[in-house]
Image 1 (spheres, one colour):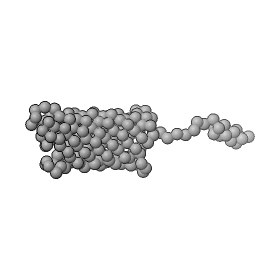
Image 2 (spheres, one colour):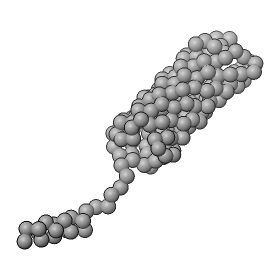
Image 3 (cartoon, rainbow, N blue to C red):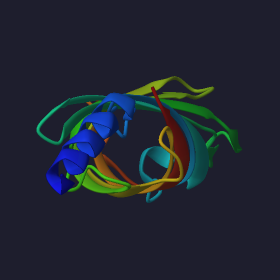
Image 4 (cartoon, rainbow, N blue to C red):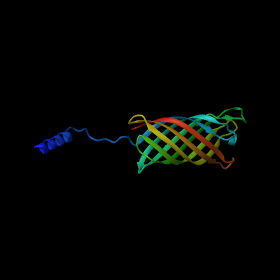
Length: 171
């Protein structure tokens, strides 16, 4: 008789249980604020930036990521602020896919600096590392560090150390 009640209880639990769902979605859009250290190369000083980022989970812990930075560095040659636009596309590997997500990755970048004496264009590559903390099922807070080496045909190598913090919404 006791086994009958256990079986009945199990059967009721199976019919009443809510459907399972994934903990986190696989696409995100985010906003970040950060600091770029240009090491005074290409006549640019350090600056803060606003970043717009997106990610798409591929499989096996890999994500395709995009980050577009808009910066306003000081140009000592023209003695005024200039505008820098730096979109990038890369891949990152998530060590854990739970509430805390540490990762490493690599990006291909482009840097376009609008200067009064003529625009500058750079193509770059660089590693990055970061961590995301989920504060809910669809919102995360994160920190990221990145090093870029930008190449140009007309100027010397442009290096940049980037540190940022941001938030993302997953859907």
